[in-house]
Image 1 (cartoon, rainbow over the protein chains, first blue to last red):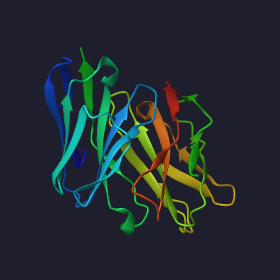
Image 2: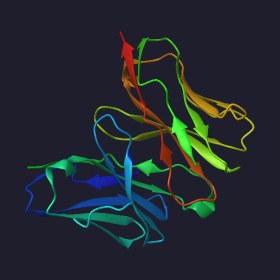
Image 3: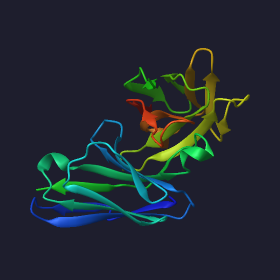
Image 4: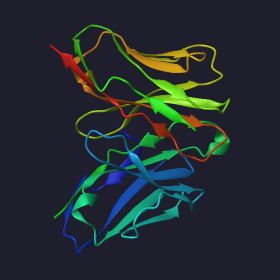
Length: 115
Length: 115
């Protein structure tokens, strides 16, 4: 069983809808990540939170809005998405860089389809 | 600059045979971690194995071992006695100790195990 939990597993939404993706980890990690992944490609980093503060935004469009309410939770708020935003969205967590080059642990992902 | 190279886009292997998936990396950082992830068609990203740059011995986890050759900057994944369930995409990844919290992914190798 994965220790990083993502909900929902599947989401279909229209271009005018507002929805949120949720991620929860109980590994005690203080770095959390959002990735977007297209078929047959590696994950593309979107955002990084370190100690609940946004540390990296990879020039993601503002229709994606991340939030880290506490050290265990990470949300991704979606609004006015485009069809090209359809993808697998992965959440991950890891120890922060001051703990050494440790791996990230991923959730099962949310498959998002934009109609 | 950091880079991960996986030169095998796809591989076909007979069940029960051993498999080697190639990975080379480039970094100027003296301290780094190397990882392998497995991604089945269902989408979850499963962490398999970790090798630290200062580790003297090659990492092993069950049927997985990492053939770490530091001078050649290679970190090949070896799967012994392959099984049908090993069919998946495999990503090699790297994280430097003294940089940001990012990890760098290779493009992946699609492994097909034949019955």
